[in-house]
Length: 142
Image (cartoon, rainbow, N blue to C red):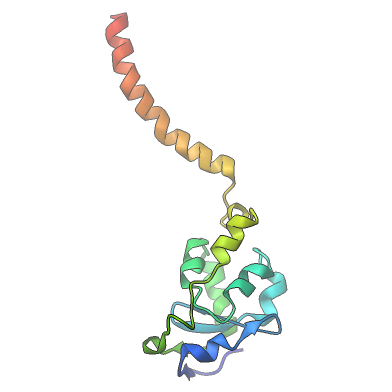
C-alpha cells in the first residue's frame, strides 16, 4: 500500500529502489513500488527490472496498458514526484522497450502478433494498389 500523498523530494530517491527486492518505477510523475508484482507482470519481471528506479512513463504508454492496468497502479502507489528534480544523468531512458524487442516479447506484451501487423499493412496497401491499377485496367478493358 502507498503512503498518503507523500511527495518524494527527488528522482534520486526513486533511483535507489532498483533491484528485485526493492523495485520502484515512475509513471506519469508518480512513484510505484512494484516489488510484489514482479512475478505477476504479464510481460515478465525483466521488463519491470529494466525500468527499476527510473521513469518508465513512455514505455508504460507505448505498451498499450488498458484501464485495468491503470487501476492496478493505485495498489502500488508510493507518492508524487517533484518534476523539477529530474536529473538526466540519474534517470536515463529505461530500456524495457528495447529489452522486449530484443527478446521478441514486444508483440505479446502489446497484444499484437507480427501477422496482425502485416494484416494492417495489407489493409492499407491493397486499396491503394486497387486504385492505382484498377483505373488503368478499367480503361484497358473498356
